[in-house]
Image (cartoon, rainbow over all chains, first blue to last red; front, side, top):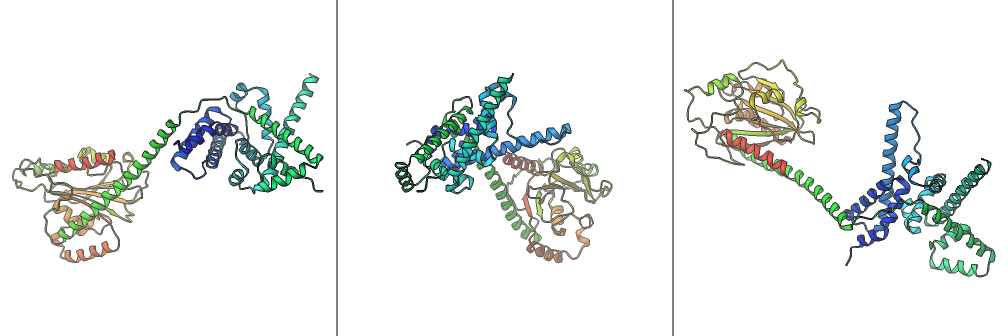
Length: 172
Length: 328
């Protein structure tokens, strides 16, 4: 019989990488972290492995973001500039590697509040309402409300950008 | 009639509702065109969100074989186990040595100088044993080569490692490295003949080579040497700090000197003023023993390695201990 974790790995590895990628914005790093998540799952053998895997992935991504902010602050202090606030910034590599449409979705996503964004990404990664609720501390009944708002805002932000760009293009 | 709220339609489409809630919504939708339109709108919004997010996907890599992750997990687990083993091993050595010291302590209390062997006894012929190796001070070395030295002198030596908490006089910051030892009072206690000399690790090594008794891998806090007037070999005390902050001392020297030192120590510090006085001139030795028993009952701890060993096999034993600690 095949290991339950191995089955989970086959079915969710890609989703975990994608979930992490949308947080660290570095494909290789996202894959490293995803593998680390499953190595830890092998050591811990969690009871609810799917929810556990995404919870640990979220934690690793958070640690990663903090480390990035620390690095950045350090560099900023070395330069003597005011300390930059942590933002979801795109790396130059990202902009080179990816087309403009992708960048515009990224920008639209960054207009969401962190909680709305988290819940939208968890949903998109395939988690159920109870799993999302357990991970975020939200009531199950509030997940639908949050998702309704997050989807509306994402599409609105994206459309707003597009019409602005179209307007800009028509004028130039 | 109440229309279905937006969030409930989201939950319905996301399959986030109970079966009874779904039945209720479906029966309403069947008869309500405005809610049907709302549902279609939300379904379209949902699809668009999914399509937008799908653009934020990393270039697809091949997932590594699950077995490679299994191997990584196994390696990490065995590294964890190894760390626990080392700690357990070190603790068992401490306990074993502590027990050994207990036995030795009571035997030497009955003023039987016979060394108790715990770790190893190498029955090397006394004559062939090299003249005590860690001859550190020049006067001592000269005397050791003097022909009128008793030829059958037993090279029995002891190594004593003592842990005493607290030992404020000797405790140094835990990060102290061997190379960066402070000499607390560089100008004090430098007289020979029975006085204690506090030396740096480097200085002591320069004199004694690698013969200083110590446990590998622990930061050395202090090295002290004592030469007695009777031309015996010097007594060496190396203080090292455990990760817990406690200081252990490894004491090495002629049996009589170590016994003497133990008999006069108050479990904290090799006090120069006490250590260099001669035991014959102190009538209160028995009283001291009672005091030390009291001290032990107060919770002081001490580890001891004893053995009737020629110095070369003693050093071999220390080396083997160090090698074992490294390999575990």
